[in-house]
Every structure is written in C-alpha cells, then in structure tokens.
Length: 407
Length: 132
Image 1 (tube, rainbow over the protein chains, first blue to last red):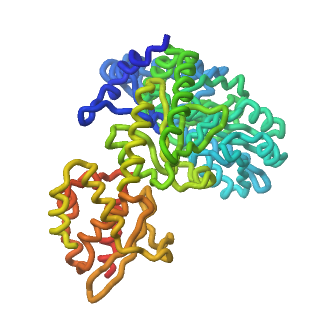
Image 2 (tube, chains in turn red, brown):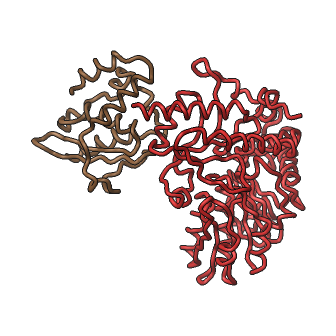
C-alpha cells in the first residue's frame, strides 16, 4: 500500500505553510524536493568523514573515497550498467550531453554526417548538437512529433539515414509528457550504424532505466530531478565508447602521468572527472536512488498513474483550458494553455493560491512554438504528489479564470 | 493621472485581489502602442511575457509607450509610466522605484526572478535616459 501522506513526512519542505495555507508543489519536473534521508546523509559526510576524495591517505579521505565510489556503484545498479566505470559523474544532464558533444562529437563528426534529434528536445539536448554541428560541418536533423505530441515512427525512420552518426532523443518530454519508445529508436539508430544518446532527465524520476536492455550508448540525467542534490549529474556511456573518447576538461584527478612535455590521461571514468569532485552531492544522489528503490518503482508508477488519470480527468473542468501533449503513453507532466490568459498572469494567481507551477518556454522553445505558443503553464508530479495537490491546482485555475474574465 | 493620485487610489484597496484588479484596469487604460513597434527591436529582454518599450524625446523629457501580452504586466507598465513618463534624464535617475512600489503595496514585483520583467523594464528606461 502506497501511503503518500507518510511519504510526504520525509520531505520537510512539503510541511511548509505560507499565509496559513499548505503549498501544492507541482513543479517537480523542474527540480524535485529532497527527502530527509538525502539531507541527513550529506550532513553525516560533512560532519563525520569529509575530505577531498582520491587524494589523501588519512582516515577522512579514505572514508569519503569509499563512499564516493560506492555511490558510483549505486548509480550503476540504478540504471543496470554492466560495470561501474561506465558511470561518469557530471554537474548535471546538460554537462553530460555537452561532454559527449565536445569529445565524441568533436572526434567523430564531419561534413556530410548527420545528428538526428526529435522536435521535442530540451535545449540541453539540442543546443550542444547545434554547436558541434556548426564546428564540424555536420548537419542537425530534426524529426517531427504529431500534433498531439506523440512519437511518430514514420517521421523518425524517414529522417534516419546512412549519414546519421548520432541519434539523441528524450525518453520523456519535459513539455508534452510523451514517453518515447527509446528501445526501438536505439535499435533503429544502430541499424544504420549510428550511436544513440538518451536524455533521461524526465524519465529517471518516474520509471526504472535499464541501459543494457535499451542497449543505448549514452544516457544523461540529473541528480536534482530524482530527489537528489543539485550540482551532480550522470553520464552513462558504454565502456568501449568512453574509452575511445578524449578528455573533456583538463586538470587534477584526470591524469595518469604529467611532465611539462606530455601528459597521459587516466582511465575512464576519472578521465572525464577533472578537478575536485562534487563528492557529497554524488553520495547524496546515491541516497536518493536508494530512497526511490526502497519505495519501489512498481509502487511509484502505480501511484503516479492514478494521479495522471485524475489530473487528465479534472483539468478540463477549467473553461477554455487546453492540454498541450495528449499522447497515449505519457507521464506526469501537463503543459496547458487557458485561452485568453497569459501563462504568466495565470501563474500569478496560482502563486497567490500557493500552487507552484512552471511557466514559460520550459527550455524547449522549438516544441512550444511548434504547438502554437510562446509560453505555457506546466504542472508536474512527483512521488509525493497527491490528489489534494491537483484539487488545489484546479480550484486555483478556476479562480484565476474568473479573476481575469471578470476584471 | 500623477503619482500622488495613484498612491491615493492604491491606499483605498485591500488584499491582492482588489489591488491587482486595479492594476489590470490601469493596463486596459494604457496609451495604446502601434503594432508596428511590436518587434524585436523594441522588446525588453528578460521578461517572461513579451514586453515592448518605445521612448520618445520631447523638449528634454522622455515619454514612453509600451505594451505586453500579459495583462498584469501591462498594468505594471502603466504604473511604471506614471512614475517615469515626461521626466528629464536627471529626474529619471533620481527616482526610487523600489520605495514607490513598496508604498503601493506591489513590492513583490521587484524580485530579481526571471519570472517578472519589471526590473528589466526599469533598467531599459534608465538606459534610454542615459542615452538621451
């Protein structure tokens, strides 16, 4: 039995009361709140065993090195990677993707090559490719989604060719909520000899990732979206591909041997982790993964599915509201427009009612524009979201609609 | 309407609903901006909604016209214009806009968040005043 009210007790911020009222936090897709277990784990490290990992040989340094490398193994198991060396710690998914673009892309792309992405990508899985294509002379190609925001296999397959060197797609759209069939996409990408990267930022907080089952070459996601701390992210890469890539940044901890004449570089993953690591953040993220696994993905999925259905049934009660992104296979991200009311105006009233939603272009301008808007409001769910949060959203939207209609 | 009258009017209003109904009302009465100015050239960057601001220089004073696609922002523009319009560059420099918004009970509009373009708008007005 999934006791969401008990789970909410693990999140101190959800107990906050503003102007005498609780807050309906519906912006988990932007960043998730953190359970006490994560905060306590990070505090324990800082208060009991903090030092710079991989350097000193005294107790604290060894203790944190062990914890840091254990965190890597936790990530490995979380996404079912074959070996822990395939896990590179980064700042966030944006850095993970930039790393691949700057190293793999720089080394492998040339004029005549193509990078294929979907129309629904976050800027983090678009702009790095645009940039490396500009530098190398490769071409950025985009395949369209349907008008309801769904993946269209035909569009993808037509855009795929023998020139495609890399396919980079989201596993779940941060605007449309659409879940992309990444396993099929990867298989077809491999069919033309392309490498496949999955942006799992929105997928990772809601569904289990199995990189071996997907057979993907790269996966990127952020710690802060899976109830972990900010400043830490993951790049998964198949070992043989990571091994073929040059370093991304240069400095401490990524070297083998340094002289003024020449430097040789460390093995993976250290080669890609220059400088002092965000060790406590990595350990905190591992704790958030354990937290999710303790709840269990089956339970989490069942809870969120019920809430997705509930949200889809209630939002249409708001006059003139249109949900943008109505694919069959979708997760708990709802972008919407209320005709005649600017999302920023909407968000103002929602904020007054203690309902936290995101507004704007969601760092995905092309898909927001393609759906016919410059700005949208977005509500998104997390493992602590409740029916009451959705009720608060609908009530606040009804109030906003009335406020602007009558004014 | 001058600033004193605006302050008096706001003093009569209770709660955010009444205050912002009035803000919307002020937006509705904003001097219209010709569509030909609604281009990137006149757009204020750093606003989540679209905001246009067009300066005119007359007899050493600045007169602004503007618009937004968000109704509350449009009202805020009307208030900003009441504060800054038909002033010299020197007078514009000396305005304490934070204090005025606090007096009106609209201080929440002064947050540095990207959500709200109020500060970008004021910065742009000062930029135009500096160039005048």
